[in-house]
Image (cartoon, rainbow, N blue to C red):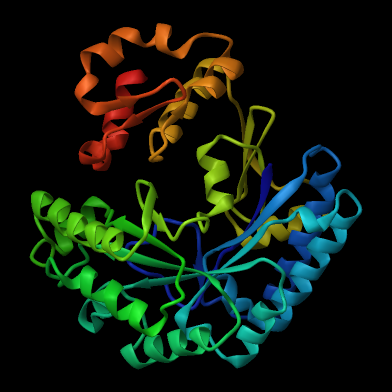
Length: 375
């Protein structure tokens, strides 16, 4: 099982906390169309060397929905037509499109409804308008409410919402209230990503009077996490919760260290222990494609030790933890023997069975730190 990631870097504005590659004020229709064509051509350049079935497609950003319904349909149709030459596209189990609240309208929803196995991911973050304004999200409360109602009246069932805990000007109950409000408006939501706020030092300094202290931040998150559990959402990764059988297939493949193709400016791909990163400039990216050149910024060969560390680190982010049999097969060594002293000396952190080693729930928020014991 593997995935296809497509990066759409365009945004109408830049959120203060966002660390992903994105560009604003590039709202020229010609650029959007040229970029979509470049994505199609990049897939043609890469697909012959990629000898794996693609089971998920993920449009991330940036803001994919700024391309509008017609251009996104053009892009997706061309992507699927290329893949048809290499596989049965019925094997694609999930197509996710990250979308902005401001872009939700009847035309856009009609387009999404036409896609088999569609999954929409909405970056909601909070209903607190003062907080939204401070973090430079140009969204009004009435727009959020209207967008959620439109989606709720659609035939789309696989819906994911993003929230950020500990945003400036939010108290400890704000994210809990945000989640309850969102589910009241959009009760068929199947997946929620709940993130800690991560900031650069300059933003921490700028917002220090509006942010919770570190210990408060953990408390805020726990309140929201427990709310999700009470509502029937199952935590399956540090930041991700879902109704049963609605886990993100695409992102789960990342945590299992599966192969994936990445298309677009700044996109990353991973195949046969090689990780590549594309150029982080839209116009340069397009020029490379026009010259029939792969738009690669750098390639990193992942040696066995690095692969082992990544497998452990990513696995311990999930509730299931490390699949011991998979580890033993992949690395030709016995996991329990290799790490017996680490497991024994830190047994309070772990649950261990014949099949899995995982981090106990009460330590799960510290999974990244605990995983360093193995590295």
